[in-house]
Image (cartoon, rainbow, N blue to C red):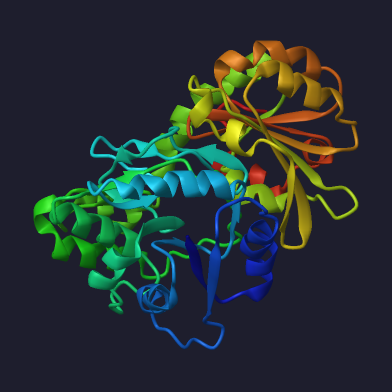
Length: 385
């Protein structure tokens, strides 16, 4: 298969995508086509990736972001083999179904997201992080290179176009970590609106970056109202935080650790040890089964030692090796997991966090001196001291 990306940061590409491809020594013949856009030669992702498709020599082309680490190229090839079935027009690592379920298990920064999909699951739209299709299809129906899309929603549009043509778009597990260092939302709303105009009969369009609906006057979109929306989520999460605090006996904050992990004060000499708990019933479809082995990925020059486990006893064993001076982050916990962890909370310094219905734990120096941002009103649960 051919793996292609468009990049604007050679260091990020070399550390993530290049390194994972170079480490592969299996039977799959891999052609790698990085497309240089450091000088802004291309004005859209579609234009750059279409250029790569034209250069490709293999039957399947994988279009992937520069900041993705491929844990298992053989798994990626096995997922791509589903394209031999003509019903599938395009596959991706992450997608959203008609009933708004996120499908495709992957690590996004430091958390695991998406339901497992050992085999492709039909979805409405796909995320751009990794998509793959037959080269002949991408030549016959290239990605849109419109300036209205620029660097967003090209996979969303392509999945909708495939579906409009009578074939399926699917999400499937590809064993990847998206080690994103930034969040680029510039002109995302405009790209979504453009796609909505192209496919008005398919709206609402559920995507990994929100739902696209027909524009309409709505009092909830007034600036004053939008600025206060966080309070409703804060009240809901405060209830969860109260239960977490009672179960563990440690301070609790409300914080999106996936986007705020870089606020932690880990370093090259004292890296962050990330432990993802991945308790899913289908071992063949879990992230831990495919990509659980430790790998070191840097975030802004600081190493994160990433591991994933599928059983509580494996998590216990890893936590037993944690020293009080170590930075450790445990994600993927539920309320039901907490009682067995309480004894460990009484040995060392720990801080708990609540986000998106799951619980994370921070141990070590970060728990002793948490980031100042976690003292802001929306990060402090109702009733917390």
